[in-house]
Length: 256
Image 1: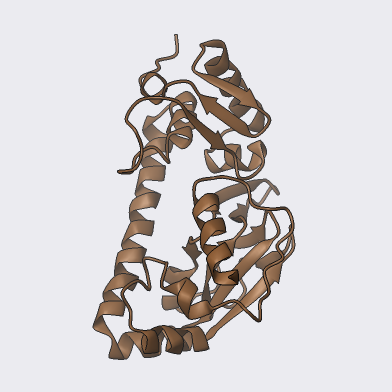
Image 2: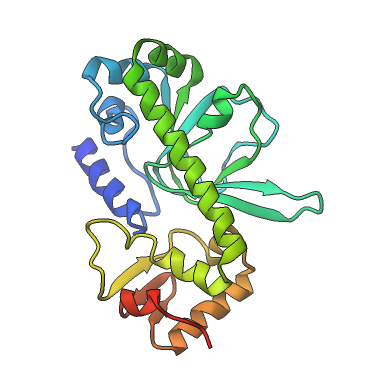
């Protein structure tokens, strides 16, 4: 039953719906191999393969505001968000924080740094209470040596991360702040299950300040854009719930 509940929570959180403020799932009853089978990185692997990797994994419950690691610390593992939200961030020499990435359920991070034998280049902190699965580097390398398919999946995952970084740079260089906010709101409306037109509700998983930093915007500017879109009749804001009147109209909006 615990695993079935996890599957439901995972699906909801993946679509930016808020999780319960208190994570009550028993760690002892959590089936790590079964959970791993739901992730693209480990899908279609045999049970014995999943159990080998799970043997090098550790599931931990984390409170809100927990520092998982800091830039400069040794990196000997990678991490998967099971429940909750984690931000990857850097601090400028002047002390300004920049959110590099927001990771939600099923998102993994630190794989590339792990393979490079480098220390962490960013810091990671939880934004909500949640569960994080950490997988040891030696276990991953051992599986890669004997499983070419798994090695290809790791490469595919790293390629997706690189593609995402390229899209980020493109967005910062070529897209206005308004376009970046619209792109974020419509990010979940690009899959096969999303209707091309019609209403949709996006529940912001973290604070507006964190999302603004992720989009390289100030919190004030992010709020101004939301007000502009609401004034234009394209969205309706209720705290962290953003009700989109019509996704097609929002996608084609051009500020005056």
